[in-house]
Image 1 (cartoon, protein in one colour):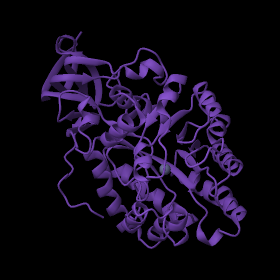
Image 2 (cartoon, rainbow, N blue to C red; image 1 turned 180 degrees about the vertical axis):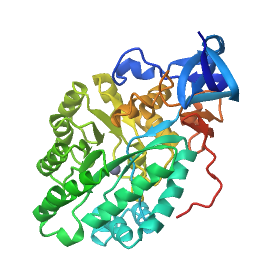
Image 3 (cartoon, rainbow, N blue to C red; image 1 turned 120 degrees about the vertical axis):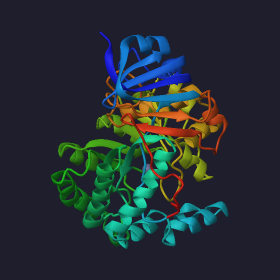
Length: 429
Ligand SMILES: [Zn+2]
């Protein structure tokens, strides 16, 4: 019997289904399998995919209902919406002065010492009222969607005191309630030691553990807990303690790990059963082996390495060869990666991390869904999953990295409904 459908997409020169026969994230050679169908079609009902395949395959199992929305992709590439699994999208202001300094060669430590860096974003967010913060954040989220991200993880971490962390998380919740995109909230109270606690870091960690975590969980404001485990930020031991306390309270751990130095944070992420370990530019061979043998997703953030000229890129080829499950995200933030473009991240991953276009697309969709525990819902166009997809302004997926710096996203569908957010509005805040 044919299934009723209320959305039918035809004429896709390439349809990337990302369909996978095995469970679990893609590793090794499987990362190159995009489930590509030529002359593809896609049908959905009630916002969920019913069938994806060749036109004949889909037409043979689907019956359009009255009023079915018919989308002619015009011979374009159609693919799942990007899953941006690591962002700091809720911030008060960009940090242009700092960018100038960095380009001129001023070291980050010096920028931080003069009140720049994360501390600047903290003072900016503390000074902004919740409505204004929600307004600027909404327009930034619209920017993410206009660039094809239909699932966006967003972290707190610029409040660094109880009220401002809660303020940021409530803004994230308000975005989740008002946007059709899937928003995934992460509590990152341990992003940095705030200036007022610089001489008494233990007291700040106690505040995170004893006051912030209970307040966040009692309001149900976050699903994940994250820590910046790094030299001169939180030690690996401190990070482990905070993550374990968070996990005990019901928040799933993820970690900013081994970004500037190898602090064995990837190993710690495996130990605490984290969902993801992110950055990993300085991960050791031992860390890679441990991650390869685990379910922890390595989230690579090419934009951060690109935005900080002094940084190295994560050893993606080595990771893939060792069998690590990797994803790609934007790290969208006002410091190191002020870009919401997942296409640009894919470009950098290809040009600078030597990933193939297919590997990078898998990492930015299918595997990224695992990094957010949303693999049953998003990341591929398979029956039962959300009909989150993009009609791209190109006909071959390899154009995504190749045409770097240009937005090839033409139309965005979220839950089977075309997104009509105003992409031409001024959104420079
Ligand atoms: Zn980050």
